[in-house]
Image 1 (spheres, one colour):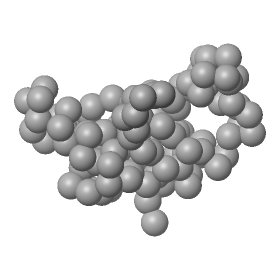
Image 2 (tube, rainbow, N blue to C red):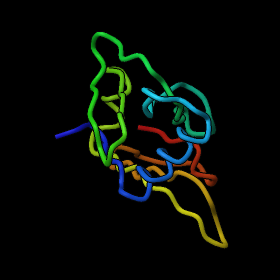
Image 3 (cartoon, rainbow, N blue to C red):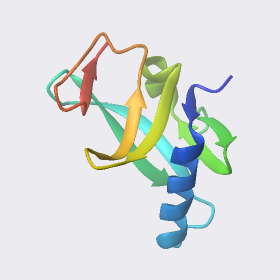
Image 4 (tube, rainbow, N blue to C red):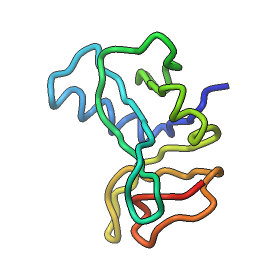
Length: 109
């Protein structure tokens, strides 16, 4: 079972962005870094290199990369993409987050 689950909607958006930016061979890296109101924040980026200890899966035709330190905080997460009148962007549902800030950009574990 992968550390994170990428929804079909998120996978479609990632593929669109990779095609738009002409980045063949790249995948989506999800990382946890220090910072934000609650102490930790998510970082999404495109990456073409997997580290020696990274978990690398393919979901919906998208390469997904997670480093081991981030995997501790991300186990069981779902990454989705929404685009409606109220909000647009990637949304991360994290069962490990003990608290989150009001804007949803950071969390505490």
